[in-house]
Amino acid sequence: MKVLIIGDVVAKPGRIAVLERIQDLREQYQIDLAIMNAENLAGGFSVTPGLCEQLFSSGIDVMTSGNHIFDKKEAIDYIAKQPRLIRPANYPPNTPGSGYWVGEVNGTRVAVMNLMGRVFMPPSDDPFRIVDGLLASLPDTTIRIVDMHAEATSEKVAMGWYLDGRVSAVVGTHTHVQTADERILPGGTAYLTDIGMTGSYAGVIGMNKADVIARFTSATARRADHATGQVRICAALIDIDESTGKARSIERLNLTHNQ
Ligand SMILES: [Fe+2]
Ligand SMILES: [Fe+2]
Image (cartoon, rainbow, N blue to C red; front, side):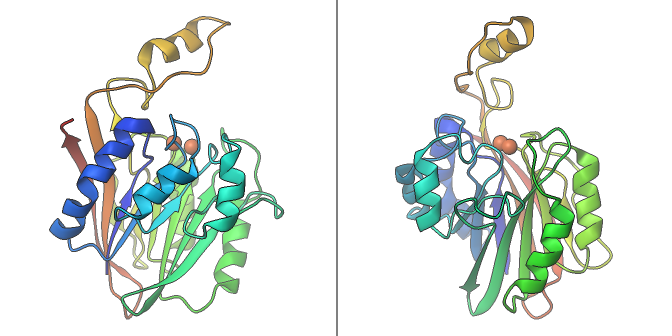
């Protein structure tokens, strides 16, 4: 099974790139399941139902998220009704939405899980303990994919080793900077510390550079607008053996998108 996982899609430049390229990418790489991280979809913060539905109908199958998912109020009602959009599983138990999605892809049961780190991140429960419970309680799924949304590389590498042999892939999101450490761990788990951002590289991790510099240099700066131009699509392409759930290969994609 070929799985495409697109890193944090930021604002309009990221959305347009995914909408324009997803069908080509699906065909080119014979993709069976397309996942994207949607936490920054709407102007850089959270999602709107309309934007998500547009992407779902254009070739995205499942959306993961992270610390920005509830920045917009409308995401709260929407996530409760849309099982294909998930949020970190280690949020408090009464949080709307689910921390995982389970579905059938070409006759194989697949689970996509979303975890969030705790180092330099908003408070959340222990993702290591929570994922143990999740794996024990999940219906029988051969293919299991984890989006570890975290800041610290050490915490993500630790999660990769912790889940090696128990899931098909652990890939990181949140930093918006792609790392070059893709590999198959000894137990058969595909690993990449951060997939990288899909959006404008003319700014600071997708946001307007003047706005972000102002935040670092003044006490009065407001929330940043998103950047435009120099758009790239960052993703991980993972080939998984359907019978064992183990990964055969992982490849990083970092594609220029001309707008
Ligand atoms: Fe992000
Ligand atoms: Fe994030």
